[in-house]
Amino acid sequence: MQRVSSTSTIWRTIATNARNLFLFNDPSVHSFSTVSIGVTSRKLHQPEIPCDFLKWGSLGFYRTSRFATGFNPLKQKPLDSIVDVERLKDRYAEDIASIWDDYHICRGHIGASMKAKLYHLLEHRAKECRYFVIPLWRGSGYTTMFVQVQTPHMLFTGLEDYKARGTQASPYFTVSFYTEFAESKDLVLIRGDIVFTSKLTDSEAKWLMETAQSFYLNDVRYKLVERFNKETRDFEFKDVLQALDMPIL
Image 1 (cartoon, one colour):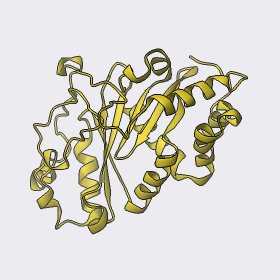
Image 2 (image 1 turned 90 degrees about the horizontal axis):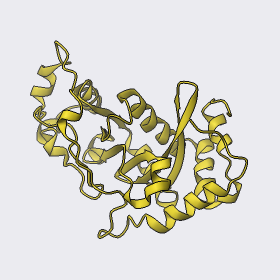
Image 3 (image 1 turned 60 degrees about the vertical axis):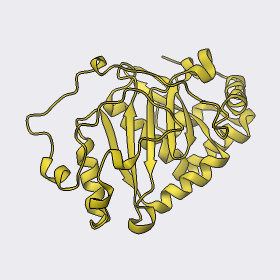
C-alpha cells in the first residue's frame, strides 16, 4: 500500500515521462505492449440461468466471444463482432443500453453506456489531458493506478508497473467506447475488458472505469486532471484522495 508523498516531484516525473513516451498519435508506436492471456487464467463463472438469453439472441449477440486473450490499443474489437448491429437499429436507446449491460454481467467484461454529449466532452478533454492517477482502495490502504485516455480507449495499469517498465507496461484493464449509435440514438456503448484478472476484480474494474469518467466529466474533478497534465508542480495527490473521500495515509 502507498503513502502520500509530501513533494510533487514524483508526479512531475511521471507526467513528463508520459508526455514524452506515450506517442499514441503515431500508429507505428504502441503505448502498451500487446499481452497474451490464456483463457485458463480464469474460469468464468457461469450462472445457472445466465441473465437473459432471449434478449441476447433476439439482438444477435455473439455468445461465443471469448474472454480477453490480448489487446492492441490501436485495433478496437469491432462492435459487429460482439452484436449484430443491424438488429439494434430498430430498438430504442434505453432498450439497447439495458440489454448491453445485462449481456456483460458474469462474463468477465464490464458493460456500460453514456449519452453522446458526455462522450464528446470526454473526448474533447482527453485530447488536452490524457493522463491521470487514481487510488484504488484495498483493505487498509490503496494502490495507485495510472490512467491513459486516448478515445475511443481508456487504459489502466499499476503506477508501480508504469514506473518500472514505462511503455512496456501492460494494461491491467482496457475500456473501449463504441460510437456507432451516437448520432442516431444519442448513445455510446462502453465495454471494459480485464486483461489481468489477478490484478483486478470485476468490481474494482467497474469502479475504476466509473471513477475515471467522473474525473473527466465533472467540472470540479477535472481541474485536478488539468493540474496533473498542465501544472504538475501544483498537483497534490492528497487532493485526489479528498475528492474520493479516502483517508490520507
